[in-house]
Length: 279
Image (cartoon, rainbow, N blue to C red):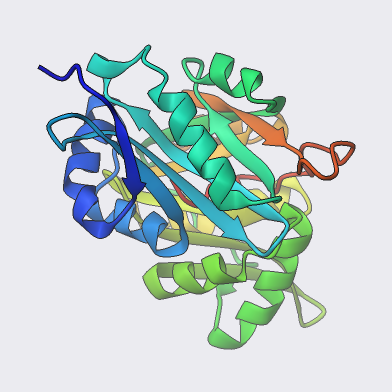
């Protein structure tokens, strides 16, 4: 019987196998490789039941000293309602220190996050499916190693925090594409293996047309491949994504929590188009 006390311990690689069981229970597509990728940049905790089994997970990914995201918040459905989610969130708060916090909430998690001081500030639409044939755009090209400095600068402006470590990780595990104008990188996108196929994101672009071109670059030549992309609801991309085979299948609520030392700071900044990265 799983009725005893719950202990929290640091999330370590040896917990991933049982974490996969929980993510499958939640109908999330994460493979072992996906968990390892997030953990490489993150600190976190697992809740262990009285049998020593993983009953809950959480990861906190810091971006510089000012911002962090919380992800992979899962509690075994057999043990919900016992305050495990709150304990995991409190542990993530401790790990994050005085950073501004961001997360993508499910409807099930929304009440807890609101009680903990998070404020809704946007909506994410999840699109996925078997891609249709898409023409390769003329104005997009593969990024080279020398482009990473410009990509990091664009990303920092769009996201409002330094995600250099994430960009380096994506460069090692996926591919980047860029749009140049006047010899300068003005937009970028990434693509990597994830879940049932591949995920496109982040996509950082100043307008919808550039975002479409970047997405088309990674869709071209992949007809029939399973692709996923998460976009802001107001990005204007949903109809086009559906037309190329990536149907809307769900989404989440973007939430932010300002640092405790500066409660007047906005809960979020402007998110880049299609800013899915980890988790």
